[in-house]
Amino acid sequence: MRLLIAADVDRTFITRITADSRFDVRVEPVRTEDELAAIVGDAQILVTRAYNKVTRRVIDAAPHLALIAQGTSGTDNVDEAAAQARGVRIISLPGENANAVAELVIAYILMMTRTIPFYSDAVARGAWDRDILRERSFLLMTGVRLLFLMGTGAFINLSLLYVERSFGIDDAAERSTWWFAALIAALTGTVAAALPAARFSDRVGRKPIAWIACALAAAGTLVIAVAPTLPVALAGAILFGAGSGAYLAVDWALMTDIIPLASAGRYMGVANIANAIAGPLAVLIVGPVMDAFTRSGATALGPRVAVGLGVVALAFAAILLIGVQPRRGPDAAGLNESGAGGTRRGP
Image (tube, rainbow, N blue to C red; front, side, top):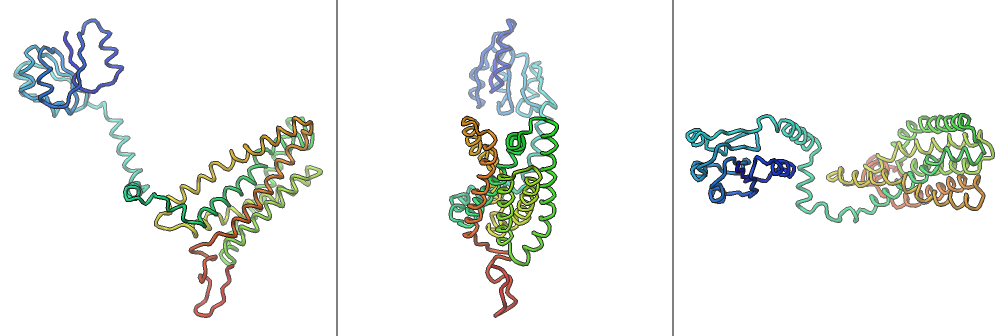
């Protein structure tokens, strides 16, 4: 049978139908009624889609036509009366697009709830130009976040190796016990510091708390790096956790105080890149350090030096924080003034 594929269809279908010896297949995708009428001549089976206008003129131009196979659920594009008069059968795929319709509805729901049209319009108007690069405080704060997470991430990523190599604990069960103890110590410090830090930041400002967080995390990291015994390292883990908790308590608030509210979603999205890459970057830096000490035979020293590099990252985070100037919040000029001539309590 002579089969004409006059629409864009899946290549798999074309391969399979061509391999069937019962069909003499011709593939000529067209769009207009004139084009379809010109090629349909000797076709016995016509494969179409919604954009193919299978009018009476097209059907009359195919005297041998017996079947119209529509590759969609509807057949509005086919003159059913003309086909019926000629005895031409029409088949379609009702219900085949049910999943696609459901997916489209869900996509529309997500699009509207996440205000994607607003951001799409902003892109079209050029709002996604390089304006972010002009927001110095935002860039500095993103750097602070990146460096802080890198500084703390060095120990987090190396904690098991630190316990094993720095203290020569080869037994897996004992190593896991000490690692779990360090985790509990760090979490204890985090929980203990987070809420007080958040409340205190409303009185003294976010930046002072962030500086204290950097100092606590750096002190804890340093103690861990030089700890002569594991109990001392656990004490450092508590300080480490306290610094992390205090920082996490004010990081988002401080970032919110910095960014333009009209483009908050876009700025937060860019800032989250720091969250995503901090861990891998930390490993990328400390990994070669560990390898160098291993090659030199000082295997026990490698984790200590690698963890100690976190202190450097935290120090640079504190330095970058100096240039951060919030627009709003306790750190913003005049926000904590009690009227004209009031005393400002923020930094």
